Image (tube, rainbow, N blue to C red; front, side, top):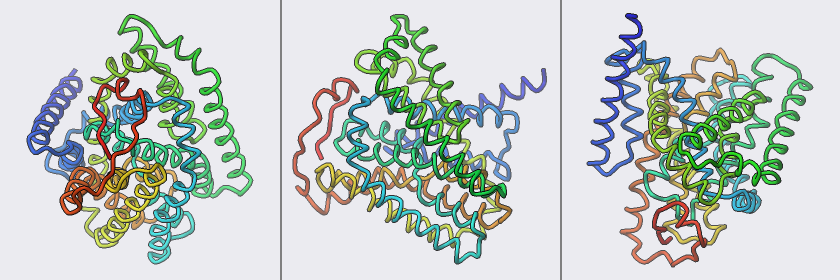
Length: 405
């Protein structure tokens, strides 16, 4: 009973703190994500205040938060829209891989890490945070922007690439053989391909089954199905985000609008837990020695992600500010970078501290740069953008006014 009282008290305090921080962020006209991350840093092990009873709820809620963020992002698009965008952005994915993984690869070699450590650091600098980016697009009201499909394509291709990367890293980190890695990769790729093909082929049937006139039934069906699919994805070392996104893509039209409405409060609650959990993972004292290397990697990560987003949005024919918005939206790193260290199983202390410091820097700086850098650039280049042809139909579906590029 005492543990339950402590949990209720700590969780209540945490939610009140997040509410205050959200109000401050709204007053400052900035995304709330950086403030949530810093709150986690202050409430975690080694911070100003400890909330041990609430930690378990926050960590569990964080996993659900990522799933809900990607589910609701998938609701804004259709399978056909996504498939076309993904095919068009294979070159963008190549630019993303080379420009962002190479700094981590070089840093790992200079730090004297072993093969697994080098691969882990390259992965940590490569992949953006799907959870942070999807929430950021919503907070900044950019879901209807023309550059958003470019951002989504890069994110999802990264997550698909994890079907190859994570099994390989997991096997190497545990001392396995090459054939074990090959088996894991083959299984993961097969499952991803089959899931996407099934979503495209039978999405209409899934859409009809998930639909229900009662909001409670709709929420339970969509949320339950999404969690099951996300869990199955994790079983084969594929990101749970892929499973959640596929469910979101299968829901179309009025069903997508209603599902987004009933899931929005849950998404906001568990998304806050996700951002808070990243800060809770960090011991501030462990970051001091890693700050110089992490800061250098973070600076490189800002430049390379802007390059990636700029190139991807340019392929869609957007204007300069839209390209810059796409690049800055991709800057944030988060949950995946932390997972990489766990999967690698490396005993290198410098790897863990460097990745955590790097992730925290870009998780905080990314949303702020996404909010302000395009605005500042626009002041120095007035009239630089040209009007873009808008994708028909989606504005009414997402319920926001589309902005010009």
